[in-house]
Amino acid sequence: MPTPRVKIPGTAAKGEVFEIKATIDHDMESGQRKNKEGKPIPRKIINKFVVTYAGNEVFSADWHGAISANPYISFFLTATESGPIELKWMDDDGSVYTAGGAITVS
Amino acid sequence: MKKSILAAAGATALAAALGGPVLADPPFDPKDPKFAAYISGDKRSGYTFAEPETRGMQDDDFTNPGFLWVEKGQKLWSKADGSANKACQDCHGKAEDNMKGVGASYPRYDVRAQKVVNLEQRINMCRVDHMGAPEWKYESDPLLSMTTFVRHQSKGMPVTVQVDGPAAPYFEAGRRFYYERRGLNDLACKHCHEDLWGMHMRTELLSQGQANGFPTYRLKWQKLGSLHRRLAGCNEEIRAEPYPLGSPEYTNLELFLAWRAQGLTVETPAVRK
Image (cartoon, rainbow over all chains, first blue to last red; front, side, top):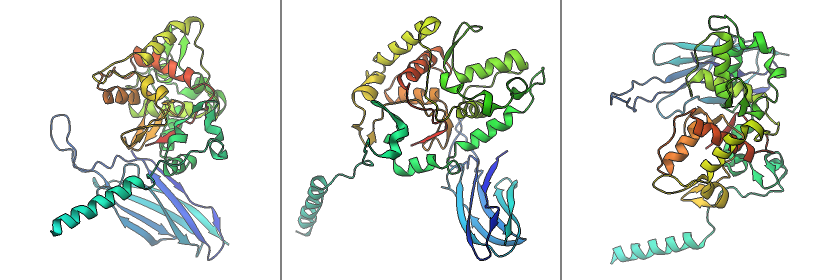
């Protein structure tokens, strides 16, 4: 079960631009490799990454092959209101890994 | 006609490339304060041979992917397992206090096993003897995680191993391995890592082969790996038959390498190319 790591600042001033860093341990099996018996190993990668901030989707990314294993992503948001921030990684096999935190905007 | 002009132009470009400054590895200045913690006398950690981007990944605990394994190890530390239904912390308490310095002193002679064991083997002994749990497979994710977590508690502490007394024959065997030629290329460890470090083998900058950062997140592997995996890779590169991971040969060599790295500090989990 992949475990995400997320870094979200706990507080920010209104209008401030803050950074979120996130990483997850995942093999990102490309689908190009073969196992010892010569059979192809099916693709299993995280194909979508979505972030919601106080219930609204504020950032998302489609991921394809060639994204490294244990992908690391960092991005910036503008502090508008206090609320939860939720990050979701969606796997090829349908699993969804979530992590997050909350930010207090003063 | 046109062809020969192109050929001539190509030749000029080539000459310019050869005559111009060679795109070198990051310039290394031993007096640079950012390297101070990674140098001890003549010894230089692999960190000082790494590209700036790779060093940057290691410098930030968040971007360092090795910490994914540190965190997994931390979870396992408090997870009960085996017939005794005990977790590591039931005997050892807080790893942050009680495992400090432990990783820096392995491999070491173990009185009960009556041989030199490395940290991985010591963890497995604990699992079998005290937890009644099966051994973790060498290079498996839980064993890597626990080894990394325990050794990480010694981060910043100098590597210090005992090589005299009962450990002496193991150390000697490790030293012999290091200086012994092997494989189709007929090379010993020392040829690259003692005689030729700082020079290039094709495009690769040869490091001193110091093992203070293991288990290491290797970008080539796209995951964290043990020293023994690296040694097996090294043996394959010189076209020698690698030994099994966890074998006595590699454990002896690990002891010699730890002695060789004494003075350098533990960097676990390091990030390398």
